[in-house]
Amino acid sequence: MNISPKQLRMFLALSESLNFSKTAEKLFITQPALSKAIQDLEAELGLSLFERTTRSVRLTPGGARMAVLARSVVGELDAGLQRMQSSAEREAQQLAVAAWPSLAYAVLPEVCAALERQFRAPQLAVHDCANSACIQRLLDHQADFALASVAPSHPDLRYEELLRDRFVLLAAGKWRAQVGTRLRLEDLLALPLITLTDASTAMRYMSAAFLQRGIDYRPRMQVDQATTVAGLVKKEVGVAVLPYLGVLPILAGMRGVQVSQITDGPLRSVGIVTRRLGQPSVIASAAMQEAASVSRALMARHPEWLLPPSRRRMKAG
Image (cartoon, rainbow, N blue to C red):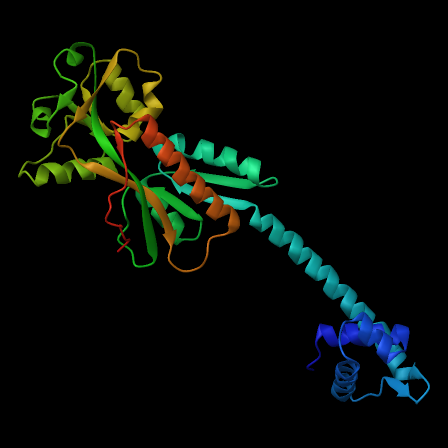
């Protein structure tokens, strides 16, 4: 049965006023358009709904019974639409972001605070995990966007670079006295290096930098967490090589630690990863804009360590 809610609303309005011209005026349509809609409804039902004379309009007995049913149908439809609207409003306030832990520490607190000011009761979920896990959450539609350190090679993803992150060396105690504030990659080879594991983007960047020089990069120790690296450096087990954003969460609790620049070291790309298909929600767009703003502020505060995006626009794929 091809009957629209609009037809039912016209029928109900006419059943209450029993006046075509007044009903058409109330519905902001022409009288011929109203008459045509009622005729189409009667044809679809196979039932006459109104008795029309030159002086009056009244419901037929069948029309009166149909009005009761139509009122019930429209009422249920309105209730369902209200529930759908309420659900859509809740969905519009929800945001999931995937980011590796150091980016979650350096960028997301200000982003979340801005969203709290801008939106009414936003529901925020932050997945702080390794870079590959961030990308997978995005592909699995478990995150609206990701803050990642490299452009993913995937045709379904788009990458916008926010900044580039220098690699630094952390040294404490006896090791601090043996290193300068500026080193070259070749200077690292004689030091007891502590890095993150091969699964980390940091390790992949450093390995690639040494491989370009024909050197097999073999740190003395590899661990999963930057906090473990910090503990080992404080106990003078060795020196650590990390991107600068990676050391920000641990520097506050490390007194007497020297941060040295690796002048010819790689620059790690940091950016926003999104899915190519579909449009981001209003809250996701606001969050990405704020993440870009926070990144610019970070570069202004740490110009020696954090560099602007490369002029060449990076693509995922």
